[in-house]
Length: 312
Image (cartoon, rainbow, N blue to C red; front, side, top):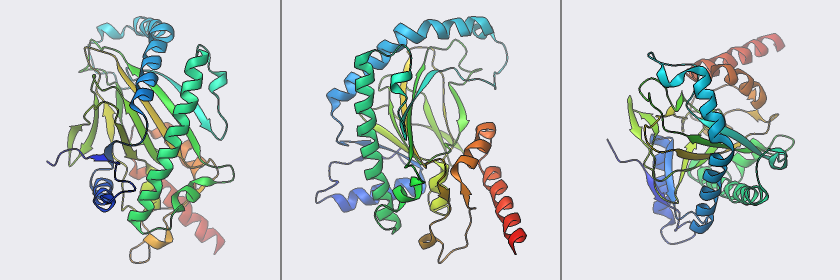
């Protein structure tokens, strides 16, 4: 099997741009995941984000997690647990309206740093979306516009820590799923591994690399590209040693954005995916996250067909 794609963005505006774009195209078409380095976010800043995130977990969340584990008797389970994940998380919403000031236990420095982190990730997400547009033959800004809705995109960061797990064979860090949204940017621990994606029927490790950002494509990009790019099943394997940090930033459509295959990508092919409102998709996804994605698409195809018949 080919090596997991690691792509330098140093040539984003240089002579090597063509080769870089070809690498991104190949990764989107064949992996649904890739890792970027030299992406323009300062290593010193990423170190600061990591230091503050890990300090916050130790100070404010570790004891709560341990109490939850004890209350559920998870350290002594004898059979596989399939209804929870071995993770400690909280969610920061950035767009359309930030909730950072409302999150308890975040000190002023961490709040300020995470606001800056969000701005840098948003900027990188929009650059990547335009690169995808270029590779797909879509006009610049098409994907950002498709995500816009009436109030702009939805953007937020899931801050997760995966503590050492005594029974990693019985409890997943995070169960297998595809992401519902648009494009996901992950800043992960460079020392403790665990993230895997499903490729050609095999689970492949996503290598932890210092100061890299892992990119993956969500269900909405599969729909808009009419299946040219696909979202991919992935999971987190719990580890017996070390706590793994994960900051996953989700650049998603606005809640009322109407999602459908780009007409330019359907001209020479059948329309393979339905048209729907993103918020309605998320309602369905909430109950089916850890199940196959195809039935979700089929459910909206059926609704679309019924609507067409009803209006005929």
